[in-house]
Length: 219
Image 1 (cartoon, one colour):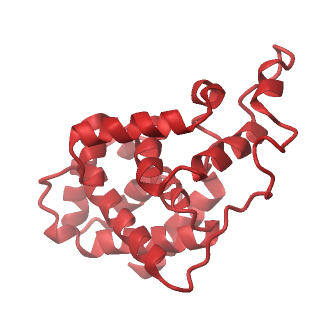
Image 2 (image 1 turned 90 degrees about the vertical axis):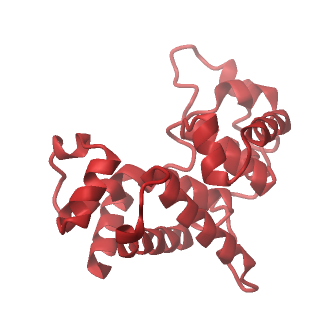
């Protein structure tokens, strides 16, 4: 698929869904690119490998496309799509022979040369929130129980509000707040202040393009 028209990409999810339902399949590319990042982070939060997460993302997009005609917009498209991904991650995790890998070295954050303290006291002109810190942060986030990890990623890394997170995770708003607070308390205070949004579980453009190609080959 070619690059999306920047004007088209400004359309709301609801507008795009209506166009796709009307037979304009090309607009589905915009929705894929729009949500690749959040679906990838969710999959990795289940400690699913990079390759397996991509497979689950592809399955999620195909399921969404095939069932779009049934989507009545009682919730937002984003909420509906993420629920599909969460369901697939849950079932994947129940498989007896599933493959779990973080893709990083086995060094714990305290064993790594890139400790939060060394980051904070580095030269002021250097970028503190670099990829090495991202690796440390991913390791810390992965230690959270999955029910806290998912809420943390949706709220803190993806910027979902309380209502959106509650709808996606099928929780009450009060439970979302409780889980988020517990997740924060489980992370080291230094990391709570310094985690980077862009580098944690990054889904690079090359993978985004590949995901568009993979989905459109199936639909």
